[in-house]
Image (cartoon, rainbow, N blue to C red; front, side):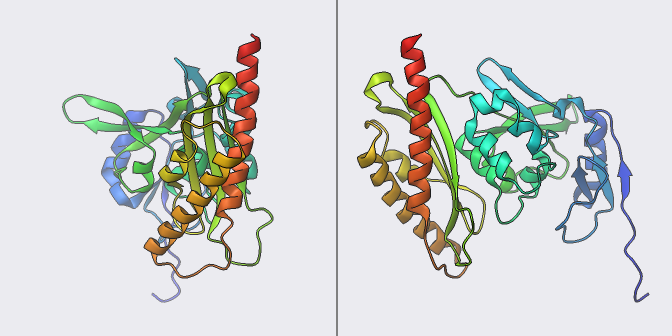
Length: 296
């Protein structure tokens, strides 16, 4: 009848990964994962079932093992931002979580339903080369788990009957630094990009860049890695010249990516400025950790 309200979804509270997977298998695309009883905003239509995974131990906490940091997807952005392990081992991620307007959102919400217009946490995790721990039911072997690269999540390669549990990435070494730069306060002009993130590893006193990873968040779409920008600093001493070359490369890469999306036009392109800031701050942290290693 006209004016009828849509029925409210039924909420399930599984206590094990296997129970959760059976629910996801039963409902398929008609179920939505949540870490709490609230229906997430922005869904195209109300789900038939809410599967509340807030009680699963496998999705809780921040841990370090064998050089990797693992964060359960039920961790809130506020908890992540204020965990010393993240602040020291993944500074850019702590900065990304601090900038989010909803500090009580979980990492699960960001991975499966990236918020607009600033999924800074995804940008930082891409820069950290994060992987996602995914569980699924095997008819012969029961619950199985596998690590998949982060990009596969937002490209829709997590099936409805699979459960992402955690993310992991290599902890920052003493000679590495990472940083995030965003275009705050946002201008009323339409900008091509809104944030950049960089991670660099330096070779001691020579300050040559041994490792580099740069990612950009455009005004539309998920974060993108910038390989040509990374090549501008790899193998070179980090400084004004190499950072400037990287900034110009990033601006060109961003414009190419934006044209490929065919999403309209923009008024300003702050990409070069954002990449300069991110690389400069990451390098400063890399120098600090490098000097700490030399002195020790």
